[in-house]
Length: 312
Ligand SMILES: Nc1ncnc2c1ncn2[C@@H]1O[C@H](COP(=O)(O)OP(=O)(O)OP(=O)(O)O)[C@@H](O)[C@H]1O
Ligand SMILES: [Mg+2]
Image (cartoon, rainbow, N blue to C red; front, top):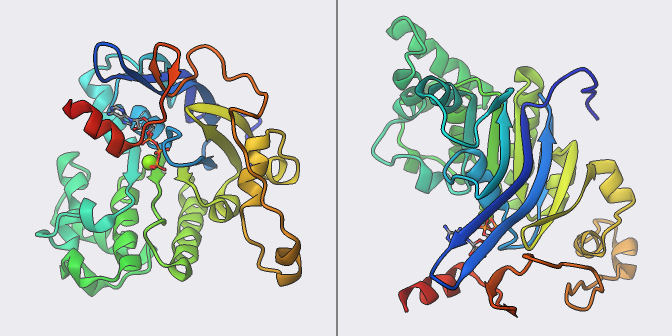
């Protein structure tokens, strides 16, 4: 557990709401009154089932969406409304993203050196070609790739190596915050641990903070200092990883935890997975908490359903 008694948070999300108006009568309330803080050098794990609003929060933080309501403060600056060009430029270096599918997010026609150099070029982060090259070589070494990998194209790598390139591309900017949205979900389980370990090592060295979005709690537990549990756009519970795992308060959190298989076969034999149904939970998900609202009628909406719905 990291000590941040005297530090101010690198990211503070206060009362974030993100609604998507999809027609005159339908509004998807993807994120409802979510607040959390991330301190320098720490990892905040955001967990929850599919459609709970994890990616939407990440995208709001990175300013892809303008918040419906609430405030997002990054490195002491309010970034939730209009910001100056200069602030936006700073943000584009200091906040980086690692994507789920590196094959889709890395330009297939570019060599790794140019993928890694792109941000440096845009933001003029070197004095001459030699310095550019040195920075690229240094970051490759940091993510465990060889110097000769610089001349290769993304398809010439394995999945795990490609995600190392994705991490290098984010890290080369020396960011204060990295948003990693399901960045290990597409990898083999054996490779997942390697990549998470690499992220931990780099964090130790650089002090970057992570917003680590995932639905696999076992990896979240391993990497996170604190965890937030998201359900239907609501942050149900947040606390240190220790607190969440040893004393989960919310029944939804308990159901998430009970779904993790144990590596110990004796424990696994007696594991009882708890179900959680918010409708019968007796908990108050009142006013504005319906995920997709049509009058008072609740409709659970997947992306596919939404797409179909939008075509009508
Ligand atoms: N641009 C959009 N317009 C309308 N609805 C959206 C939009 N983006 C997301 N949603 C809806 O908001 C809800 C939350 O979506 P989000 O992608 O944030 O979930 P998630 O927790 O990341 O899920 P997953 O684990 O499947 O990635 C979903 O119901 C989704 O359909
Ligand atoms: Mg998502």
